[in-house]
Amino acid sequence: MAAERDYVRLHAGARSFLVRQPLGDLEERLDPRHFVRVHRSALVRIDRIARVRRAMGRTSVVLTTGAEVPVSRRHLRGLKAATVGRAL
Image (cartoon, rainbow, N blue to C red):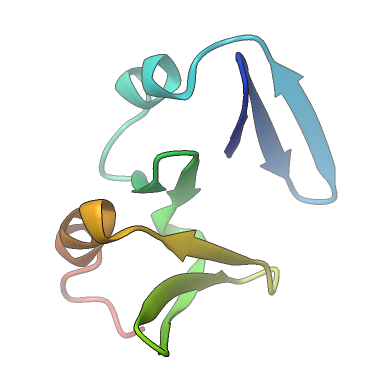
């Protein structure tokens, strides 16, 4: 999921949907056991994270689709907590 001004773009497989709802509101409605905020403009499904990539002082998550989503320093701790015990 990625924020686009007052909208959120939801990605589901090869399809995407535009929803008029702030990302923060959507985050509150989602189960934190399944979704984690990785950036001010991005939420990801935890089970879709293939690996965490660190390069040149930056962190990103690589999803099972191959998409790479940046992780902000502010949300790095939450990502680590959400992926404890997972082999990434």
